[in-house]
Image (cartoon, rainbow, N blue to C red):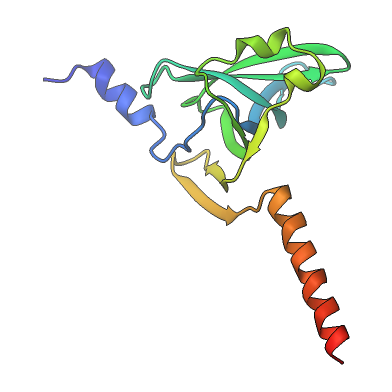
Length: 168
């Protein structure tokens, strides 16, 4: 028999969450509520975007699942913890995937320069969009090519063009 708390939690879960892993560079769109400057009673809503590297994912896949996102702003590291199933998070975009071998990337806090960079991994870009009225999430998938493949493709195209010109 399920309790009322469990039923409530099941209703609040977002159904189609993306596969977000440590090492991913993500863009999180969050609704921020703030009082208006003219009258303190009115509340203005705006969407604030936070883009950074996921350094940890915690608490499994339940209602309490969170990700820790880190970015460096003018030399100062900033980390935010986002609850994945929060209604204030409207969209999570995975921009690129990093090739990592650890579940928690806390070493990035002290790493500087080249050691702070992650190698890129080929992936399919995903975007999670949720409607504020319904907790439905759409998936958009776009195939992305890694930068190395693009440069290799350009070189092969140039060689083929040269061969065609030589034959003429």
